[in-house]
Length: 246
Image (cartoon, rainbow, N blue to C red):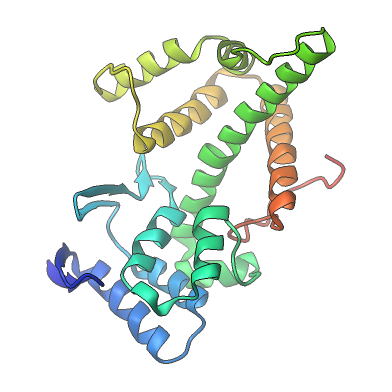
């Protein structure tokens, strides 16, 4: 382990590979490399699947296969303080808008094929799955308005029933039993991401291929519409198989 100084002057214990990633990022910025390219290269050098830094737990890899790259980007950006353009950094971390448009091949070269594949697992298993839930909830809300319901009301159970054929409460209970997690009334952001990825795999195991394809198309269509409102289509050059007519 290596002691690495953060901008506040305190130290955190970091693995050798992670220390190399942080060191590379600082040196690349000092040499004038574009910060986004330097950041992606540093992400490629990073080795830890999770860590605790300044009393905050970070889980970058869900189930050993789904890579939360924006969480790691946030962690790495914090190590270089005010060296990054604040508006571009915030656009990336909070709105998913990268400062450069890169092709998939460029991203793979910077972060590595393995991490890129893990990123795609996260994209489809967490980002797209979340979009599916929101898309179906949107459909239900529209149906309610057509039927004359002015208030949207609580539609969570109906949303989960349509996608997974059971309630969110039952699914969360099963998930926690499988993971040996406590059956709490609340859920952390890290556990929510893991639960969402579990839902993705749960759906793939139990649904017919035609429904899986239809649901994925619906989710991608919803996601594309939301991203277009923010001025971006793909956050990390996913090169998605996409039908523009969606």
